Image (cartoon, rainbow, N blue to C red; front, side, top):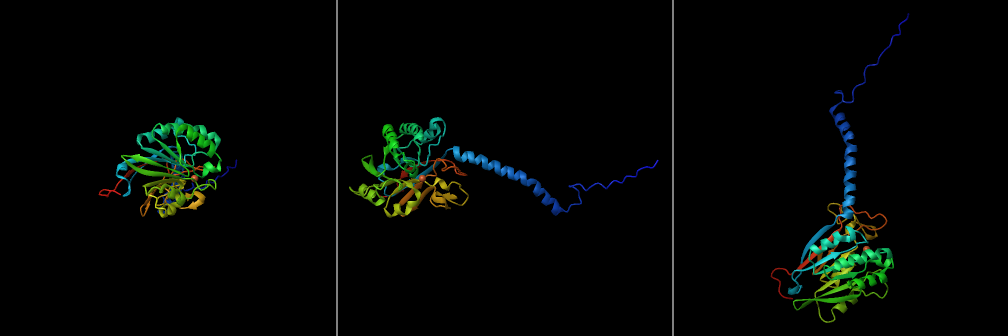
Length: 309
Ligand SMILES: [Fe+2]
């Protein structure tokens, strides 16, 4: 009987074989670690996507201005903007509670709160909650006009006691002194809206009060400076949506790349602008990254040693 001779090939070299050069071994290690690293980055982005769209953050600022009347030293303003009918806890309990803890003297809302009729009941609940904390003042953003909801929104503001300040101004009194709070209607409003110079001229009819302006648009800073506004509260920028290190955000409204003045306090001359990073995303894909929804708390003070204006 013939025996079949078989021949076995020598065993293939193990991938971990010591025959690999150190350089190839390092490269192989890197290739093996890459999926783990990628998974980690994706997971971190996913976590931040949730955090940046749901977890409130408090931005605290002290703003010292030499023209501030002495009686308003310590006057605190909570600033909310670009809410877009978001929800922070049932009935926005978390948002209202964070505002309440700041013990503000007034609360200012700088537009882009609602765009659809169906959002008005939630808006009404928010207004009632905030009004239980402090007097509330409101100006419109572009979205209220785009959604044509300004008239029913005004009815909600009226019912809840919120002051609608578009094209208007009020004087706030404290300790026998006054400051002026004026509201600029968003530029998407009707033709009857006042220009900034018309509004400031009205507010200054009786003198030159310390002027606080509510205006949705952060990108009109040079106008606020030229009209000698003392302090502006603005929004609209959503913090540049994606806040990368060493930038003021990645994308501004109108798809402007690397916008400026989208967060915090910006000074030029004697004008300070406080820009809120807003409370929500915007558009069909409301993406925020590394950019938590912001409640802004500003305490107005007088610089140490400032003379009475
Ligand atoms: Fe806006």
